[in-house]
Each structure stands twice: as structure tokens, then as C-alpha cells.
Figure (cartoon, rainbow, N blue to C red):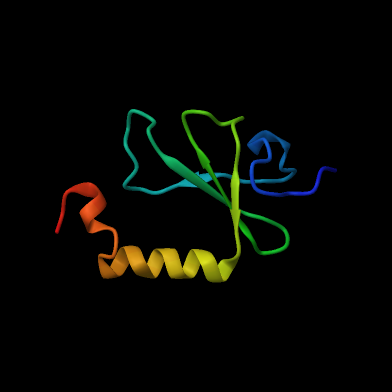
Amino acid sequence: MEPVTNGIEATAIDGAVWRKSRRSNPSGNCVELAVLSDGEVAVRNSRFPSGPALVYTRDEMTAFVQGAKDGDFDDLVGRD
């Protein structure tokens, strides 16, 4: 089994169960996440399911989600 590192082909991650947000775009423009066996979180683009995956620690994902909830990224989507 290939070690799971940033940029790994998403389909090469054994046992990954990918899921997307309930708020995802019906046309398939989504980000999908999978919790890995070591607790890290892999992220991929649903339009390219065999493309590269980015891998984050739980702490990194927690910081990102909290930042999104706090509005830290609103300027990126046209909300100030």
C-alpha cells in the first residue's frame, strides 16, 4: 500500500469513504472529504475523483472549519 501523502491519487487511498457537504452544488462542483485510518482527513475535487488528494491533520481541519464559521474567508466569495 502506498503511503498517503499530499498529492496522492485519490483512488489510491485504500478504504477511503468520500463524502460531500449537504450544501454541495448539484452539478457536481464539490469538495469531498474522507477520514483516513490514522485520523487525518483527505480532500479531493469531486469533478476529478482520481485526481490528487490533499491530506490534513485533524487540527488543521479544525482550524479551517472554525475559520470558515468565523467568516475568515467571506471575502473570497464576495461577502465582506
